[in-house]
Image (cartoon, rainbow, N blue to C red; front, side, top):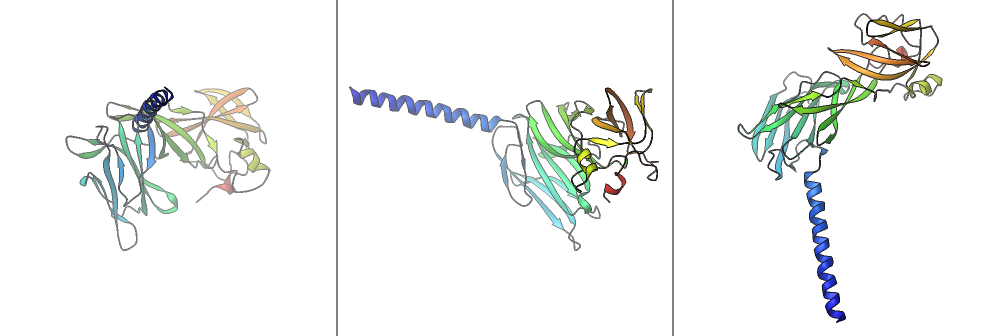
Length: 284
């Protein structure tokens, strides 16, 4: 009797374990994910949308100055993408694989130049008819790498160094719609100042908290309407960032009021800065 019960328990336990493993494998296979694609190393990942692992290989050819001359991507040992990078100033290539669903998988290719400048940045999808990768993105020059993927969106890291504030980073989410990546919202509250980490002083502590000290009287707006004016020497807190037609606008809080100011202006006067101790922290 005990032997029968033990055998029954073993069968039930084995069945449960099998089901759990199957569920676990299914979750791993179907879950949205992002991972790096090393150059000159084959990875296994579904890019054709059939739920089966494909062989993806990225290779580069270097010129005599050790810059990338040619870039090639093969899928299942067949050329899916070629790019002539001659005289583009690309030192190396970085790549990401991103999966939203079994039908929506992407490859991001980034060409990196001197001082980590992003020379080109495109996200591609595989076309099963042509057997080629085609671009689905029209990213602005602040966009960087994909950082996360979910069933209904991709999130990209962004960064820029406006002369008015110094380096800022933020995240933006995109939806895949009509074979294109579309920005879900041009405004984000994820913006962070990163200029407070190179030095140890009182201003660095403020920058790490997104706090800036006005170097002159500044006006902040809500639309075309003046929201408030801040005197010289007062603290304001960076709250949001928005992108509009290639322009960057930042929202600051002063007391209980919030207002916007344009940055990255071409006619910015470095001799009359917006905020104290920013000029000396600008890179490049």
